[in-house]
Image (cartoon, rainbow, N blue to C red; front, side):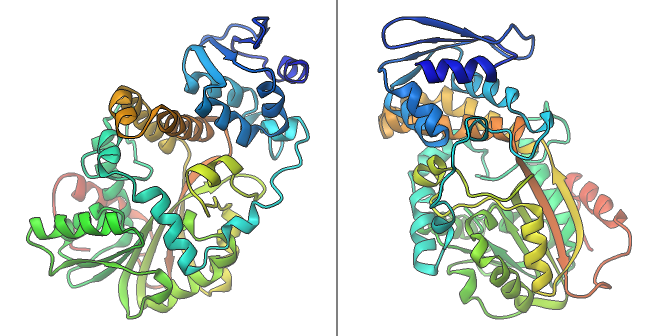
Length: 414
């Protein structure tokens, strides 16, 4: 506990954090804050505090999962919120995370886990997305949008924000009657079905998740549009053909930096000469670095969050023009907090479906992600690409007009 106490005495300046060691001794850190809830944690063994200091990203999550780190006042979100607030990006420096504060050497194998060949990619996707369909029903919106929502007002419901996200993205695609659209990483089909319903465009959605594929196909069949909105189990690297529009939401995080160039090169080859592509991805602000060991071990094996510079470099090498950039700074924080509260409200059912350790893993994942987007190095990027600089109007006014029409329920005609 000595090392933990020494580090956290310096680390926690704002917010009240109390810790109780395995012997029952109490420690206090920080000062009261009006915007940070007070937290008390208890360690059930003597070794956990030191492990957390030496390997924060892995040891803290595993300790919480195993019940060796117990939050007795507040919840895991409150705990991570205090820590990330005191190490927040806005305080300056390129990386203010706990690993840097204690000179943790990092994860030497992190980059190796992001070499996502085709077989490995399918296995990684199955690890996360082929979980019980009921689990996702418990915390996602009705359309199962498992990516950052778009909050025109932070007070909006999750359902409204996800609907607005689809309108925001589709408006940037400048869709027109007769267009053919490729949805790379289509999830459970919500975006593809929305595009067809709002614009009449034909859509092909591709995924590596068999569970997602089955539900997406059923949804299209139930709506009577299976001939216009199709779904296939295929890796993007195997795609052929030409598409007027390409959209990819929440998939690029599974590509891996070794494959960034090939991803953009493939998209360029699939895109019509006057085509438009919209990429929506989690992004990192600051120096590129591997995803933390806990997340890649338990949640997203092979996952990697790119910096804007890494994305730009790969797109430039593929000779595809970035025509618009938007940074969503807080939208995913709002989304994740709603997912977290829905998960916590359904704790009993999740523990019955799996067990208490799985529930704590999922809770830690959502809480850590939410605070990472609130205070850390995480944002979302929406990047628009074209092959031809004349493919779109020369001002962004068309986006605003199309988005308003979609939100009003009108059909966009491009």
